[in-house]
Image 1 (cartoon, helix red, strand yellow):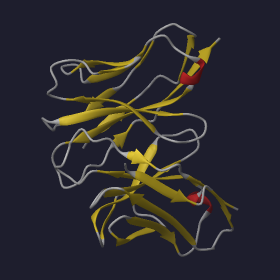
Image 2 (cartoon, rainbow over the protein chains, first blue to last red):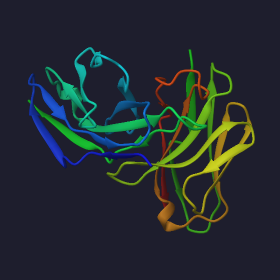
Image 3 (cartoon, each protein chain N blue to C red):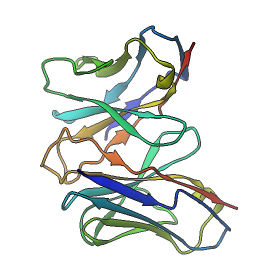
Image 4 (cartoon, one colour):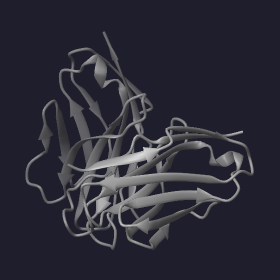
Length: 116
Length: 116
């Protein structure tokens, strides 16, 4: 069974500073993918970034990057140059590459508040 | 381009009344479809997923059911709502299994259901 753990109850960051949101996972599958989503107060789920378990380099997408440490089973999201619009809930999710469907298992999320 | 439509956006229903939430996807064929529920301030719980017409898998035994009468239509139903069915319901799609493992889930805007 897969499990995603996000234990930070709430994070605060000053505008224009960088922030790291933690995610650890547990799986026995050799191949898997890790995803991060942003959920603003409107409720929509916005896909941010993807990291494959066999990717040699950490994923980056604009101001978002993943600090992927496979041996530690962690995939922390780094947001650089925080903006007020980054205030939202952030979810880490995992997909196993085995099995008949492509479901994502989500963590409980982290609330990020950006201060002006 | 692909789009996903989910309606209604909000719904207030009395206990014991029926429920029907609909989700349709455009611009892709044979997608995997998902229903998630999110309790207030919590993570996403997978309720149902479907890899094809008429193929429904349930993740959590509950008062709800799902159907996929057409390739790109996914319906969440209940015959009699309970108070505990209140929550934020999200429909999502992704490419068929095996097509692209790094394909993220694409979510609809969600339905906020309040059972009174």
